[in-house]
Image: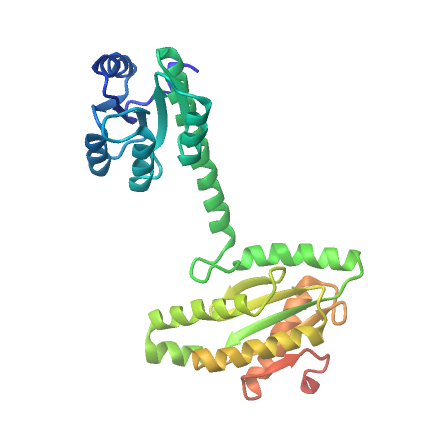
Length: 305
């Protein structure tokens, strides 16, 4: 791997009790542009790790007073992100395996081939970079589809999943239910207790939804104090049982109530927009007729039950 992968900001700690090895590796890595520090024993190395932020540590397996394996464990306990390369003059496969189990990134033997050491460092840095990029991409993917406050899916992702689920259920002739949920008197709650308490209520409500639904159910914040739960391959009767459990739990644990509107596919419609509208209409009817209700959509809304 070319020297282009080296990074002048990369901080490396070299730990070896042989001055000749320290000098040899230090001179070479400094020439390659790394920010290098060295320690002649484990105690000094631990102190340096506690004070400074290294990306890589190169540690001799055999050190006075403390083994390299023990130092490896300490380094990982202090700063778990540090990538540790173990070196030894008389290592065995057992040593290598043991160090890898403890979290070492690689294991090389003396006499050290400096070009091999550089390749090892560059490979570890490249792997760390790729892992960081993957984690960052995963984070932004999650952020783009979830509501920041509650951790539930956001409206945009809900619509995407709802379209897919409706298509799938129609294709395979399956039933599905959708619940539209609204917190009763939420504006008054916010006015009386403040927006921070209001946000806390939304977060706790999301927790109740998670606790009372299956892993396959799709939970989303529709907007404001409204939420949607999509119940794949679930009848309205089954969805009503879950809705009743949610209503009771909310009243008992949060000292507020919710009104829930339910609509079913294909019983009421085969269109995802209509399914949302019908559940919303049933929920709105419940809000107008006393709140703290579960209302199943009916074509003539006055006969909702």
